[in-house]
Image (cartoon, rainbow, N blue to C red; front, side):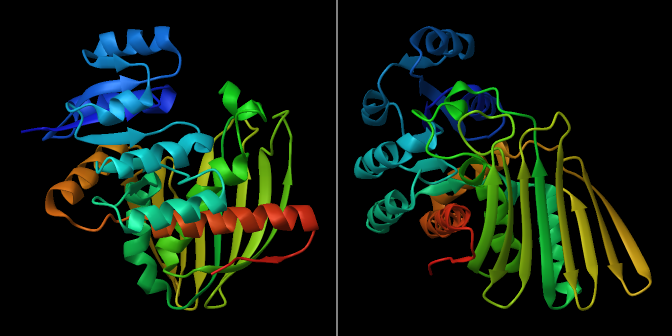
Length: 322
């Protein structure tokens, strides 16, 4: 029998979950969706042949829904995720885990006693270029510097331009990707960060930030999100004692230099990651395996987010709590 899922937050990103959940993951299907805006919600549900439910609580309680995907704005993540965990249903929660660090701590505590552990949708961990970079990482020797830059067009989502609806800007909404990738690739934790943020085109929250951070092994990390340009880029660089790595995880391709030798890897980054995320979630649900990205990862990322905001406010380096 198929694993039947319901999707809360079927907007632009949630609609991708609907499409991939219906077409691309054997053993999984979508039976219901929930969206605050009723008319587009009903239209989307009809277009995909699934049921529309106006209230999230109704979807969570529905006996025809075995598992729930939450991809609403972060300010609502804690309440919705806590309700899914309390109902005893598997949960796939979009990043960031919560809108604030205290909420993330509370949710992690609830997750520890839940029947099914929450699965966090840090989708870049399934990016083929990132996976190849992780495979090559040991060839770099001890890494002393990592640089990650993510450059995107300005948001077209109204809630990301309204302080009444969003609890953060690019640090919270996009920075969590590169914070998580740093931990994923290095296997280390952040200890301190010096962060600068500003608004370029977004009238409400930061759409440009730079950060310099330290990891617990002494490695230094340079981080950037520019969400105000009409061009796009997603770059990774790592400099180790035995080699250097450059990777483009938006379009694809990696370069590894060790001594005078250079290797190029034609790995595409255009493969959709959501089917891979959904398939891995299904595997964990059916086997009882620990999710590859869980509450402890989401909590670590929110600690970094909170430290970045403190640093920007204080104008000095701030410690990242353990």
